[in-house]
Length: 159
Image (tube, rainbow, N blue to C red; front, top):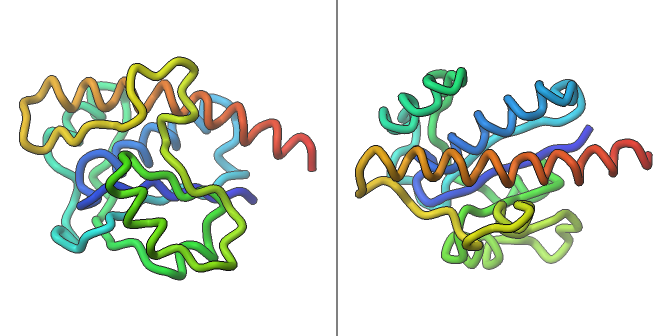
């Protein structure tokens, strides 16, 4: 079983969107039973809260229900539980790198590194912008999720 953790700052916009999108992509590729998916935030601002309503609305228009998700803060133990710990941007990647135990042997990096030809390496935080920012984030995450599934499928087939 492969495991993936998506991480942003507050775990109410980008990382819950990534969790929902990636879960849908796994289902399209019939890999949902072979990969565990979760999301977390580097800060505890919104612990226990559902995703931002704008993120849930965009997801809903694409057939994804984020309403059952609740924000949580990333922990050191997550590095024991997940093979991939993927940040949405460089700032959160830096926070994760500082938290990462020396024994972590998984992949710590940016989600957008899995996109075929990303226009940028970071998924921008749409929280303080308008609805269009959430649509853009969704599209970016979907592109990177397809690339990530390709990598994971190869690894699963090689086992």
